[in-house]
Image (cartoon, rainbow, N blue to C red; front, side, top):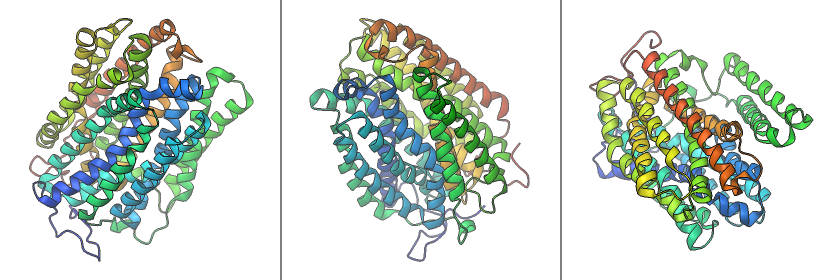
Length: 492
């Protein structure tokens, strides 16, 4: 197994890696958690502000979907090139550059005068997130001592999960206290803190890709392909599936994605070496990610609107609804990461989504005049427990299956899979549930659609758990080190 860090000429960590309990280790964890937390925060914080944004900027449901999906689109489309840039030019360097880009884009979002301008600024913001997100996990894998990676990634999972879950609370408080625009301005001081803490991170690269050309063709095909497919899925219900622009965008998107696979299979230096998918562990983890994280994106989108438009919660109350999930992920994720490193990921990753699906079914109790304690809290606790069991083992599994030198690619691929899944789910599941146009302003119409959408998402969570229980047969990690066992053939 290669060492955890490729030493940088300017000075890297000594062989063996940083220890989790050291002062430097804590500072590195702080930088990566705050950095990735900014990106995760903006994946969720906007959801609770959607009704306010819609009223302020006179947007319909498609406009609100694009407010979410413009960010998810550039994030998903460019995550792979973001991981490759880190592997080529230094993961710390690209991580910090992404933080700065994200901060500037956040300022543009905060001053947007129209829904169209906000959507454009959100797309720019997603580019910064694509640069910083893969670097956060890859830096942990490349920097920490093998004995401490499970704990470090588990702590990252819990704390990053906290930022994801606390986003709606922060957003709700800011919306009620002042304006939805503050949910973007809050990123500016966070970005400054990340740049300060990032001084502790040693630089690391993938030595196997040094001197190789970047796969710009693959990056362009991915971005254009996802844009076309997402445009068709979002606009199709309103404009009609036979509308020339909608149909043309969909067909062009599919062709570009097929072209992406061809380029990656035949190119001399592919952005995504398709050989990594020969690992049964890696492929299974990403299949589960696609199903579960897709459903999660739709749940977050629907849940925040349901609480405000149907149950009558304020933005702050709706955002506060996920605090118990935040606490559970903070308390349990590090332990879950250690357990997965010791016993293998199959049981945690298989059982976790099924537990979470039970929490989603409990959300069917949320309707007009719903009580937080009686109707919302039980659902959030069960759902949070399932996610706490799932997230850290999944992160450990994906990185361990790919190995240290491909940590950036592995992280980028898994993040891209999650973002693409969420992107498609937010576009498709509301339509499948019968929600469109201004239905989000009609409590009865949205409530009916919410119930159908939640049942769809619960079913997807069960499918995700079954994928792991059926397909994942071998441990992804060595119980003693938390790294994959040596193998001369793909994991099977």
